Image (cartoon, rainbow, N blue to C red):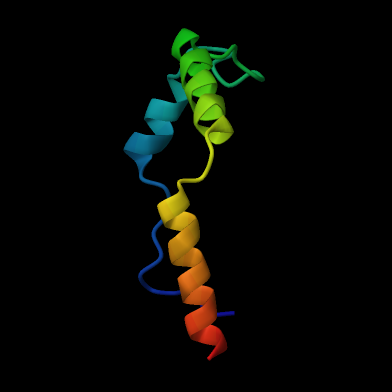
Amino acid sequence: MVKDPSFHAIPERVRTAASRAAPGANAGPQPDPAWSKDIRDYYNAVMQEPVPQELLDLLARIATDKAE
């Protein structure tokens, strides 16, 4: 198999920076940051809201237009 001539190995500076990372930095799951609960709560609240009637009407109109 011939390698693509544009292929480049990982640059040395990237390998060096990765090797200097704090020991155990990627040693398993990390606790969720404090702000993640706020985002999750906001998302769940939005998901509980009803779909606006205007959107339902538009979807129904599109469906009937495609059926014709």
